[in-house]
Image 1 (cartoon, chains in turn blue, yellow):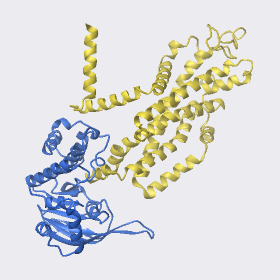
Image 2 (cartoon, helix red, strand yellow; image 1 turned 135 degrees about the vertical axis):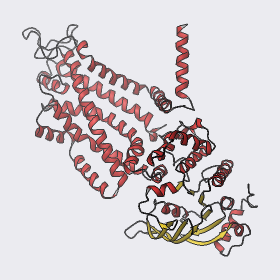
Image 3 (cartoon, chains in turn brown, blue; image 1 turned 90 degrees about the vertical axis):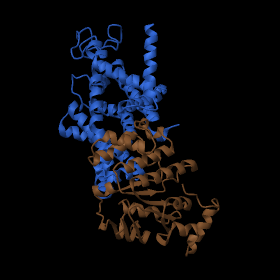
Image 4 (cartoon, chains in turn orange, red; image 1 turned 90 degrees about the horizontal axis):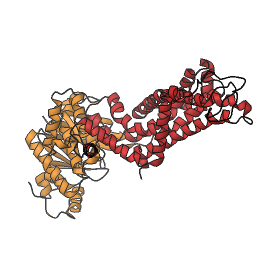
Length: 256
Length: 310
């Protein structure tokens, strides 16, 4: 049985005649310990899949199952302890008036964790920031450092699943690689399951064993990393996407 | 030598405050406050406003020591009525032979009481209504904001008059009436701010941590609305002082013989032409304090409002 099962997910926004179908029957399943990628152009609904999964977007049809059990709406505390999310823009995802310490200790307080001080310091060390960062404000950090804080925040509740919504697209190239390597290392150490959304095929083929291509709120096709690297696609849309991405990366990204 | 040591200690404190790597919550918070203070200090008009407001507070606290005469008991009614300003009576005397300077000094207590209590009552109410309406949206928003609209539809002084008429004249009732009529603009402002904040990713993030709505509103939305509301309250202080004075002028605020600036102007109105100082001196006090609050509010806006940053 898969860890995450999404069946025929439908999401519609708007009301009274002006309805936007953001997702039209999207299905996917992710095994435990797997890293699953979702690629597509802007507006294809790839981020909406993640937002719907964690209850930030209104689900109008279909089912979401974790460990074979349908998730409750609104999501309960147990769900948030299992599934966490890292957002796209590290400049928007940290509260501008809260210190890093507050950002990291608040989830611990909400869920009644013990040894909060030690956990906060450990979380900072694990994402490659020292304890010296603990009492800084977000505006005193760079974009890469902020995204590390966001990753630490997602990890501090010790979840099994991390939803990554374009975690590196707001960062410049060298920082991107650092953050991706950090995510890779954390997954290996903790046996995490990732669902990664990106418009960057290079990032997805570096991070994910399997991926799904989306367009206009629908699944175009699902394929493995090997198939992607061999250009063994069956759909024209995927082929176009691949050609477009090779405009600037001629060779596949080497594995670390 | 000791001066040098003190200088060293100051340098150390400054470095401790401005450290990029604070070692404790307290240091982070004081550092943040110190940076805001440094930014505020550069604003001359803001500092002038702060000076006036601080002077008002000090005068109110030490009114008993500053005032040379009793504010309620007059002098000799045959010889000391309506004396012009002199060294004996800095602002002259009124028609009951009371020293106007002493009355203005004691009147600062009433003014400060009005300003302080209105701020303490109206700001939290406005913030709570506005952030709740903005955060939840839907029917909660509709109900709360229509109530706000009803309060906003009345001119402030008229509504305050109605409340005072219903509750009976007196300074306490005037304060309640002013507080009831001054929260709606704060609710509107807080709601507008909340609407821009509620879809921010950091709010989504804390929601995904499983935080309750109360925790999100209080801990995450309110701190971001607070600065613009504080600015607005400070700028409104001038208006609140004028409303209180207006109620006093109409005889619905502080009751005689309590020294209240608005009531003092009303008393001086009868002989404005011949004895100008009786109405002018409390008027000057209202003018200076209102100006002080306006300067302070403008200064705070330059420091706190991210949208007004140059």
